Each structure stands twice: as structure tokens, then as C-alpha cells.
Image (cartoon, rainbow, N blue to C red; front, side):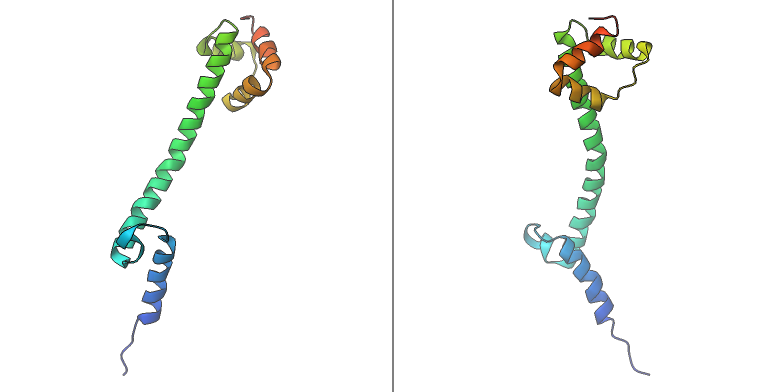
Amino acid sequence: MARVKRGFKARRRKKKVLNQVEGFFGRRKNCYRTAREALDHALQDAYIGRKQKKRNFRSLWITRINAAARLHGTTYSRLMAALKQAGIELDRKTLSHIAISDPKGFEKIVGSTNLG
């Protein structure tokens, strides 16, 4: 019986990792063991970052809505409560976009809630 050399499979597995860490600094891009560890951390950070991105955007939208609401003599929390009570179902992303791109439209929305 001849011995089995595992060169091809191992090389393919290592090459996949080394291709993913292209652009990393120092040994992190060319030593397999270091590269694999760096890649694991990078993928974890990317996963976490995708969750944080959603949080950050929601926070940005709220800040924009609050700034626009204050121009019309109310606050973010009062506006959102009034919108809910009036049965106006606009999400924060859309409301933020309206506040920036169509101030007159936002003014009508605030007016329809009996706040402005």
C-alpha cells in the first residue's frame, strides 16, 4: 500500500484563507496560522459591524427627525407619540428622508398631528 500525501487538499484549504487575507499587514497576510487567526477575528468584527450599522443609522435618523421637529416647535418623542396617535405609520428612515429632502412635506406631517 502506498502512502497518501495530503498536499492538494491542504494547499487548497490554505490558499482559500490566504486569498481572503490579501491586503492584511505583515505576517497576517502570508503565514497561514497567523492569517487564519486574523481572518477569524476579521469575520467576527464584520458580523458585529453589520449589527452596529443598523443601530448607527437608526440613531442618525432619530437625530435628524429631532432636529427637524424642533424647528417646528416640538420634540422627537412628542412627534412620534402624536404620529402614532394620529395613525400615521411612517418609519424613521422615511421620516428622516422627508425631513431633509422635503421640509414643506415634513411641516404638513407635523401639522396633521395637531402639534405644529
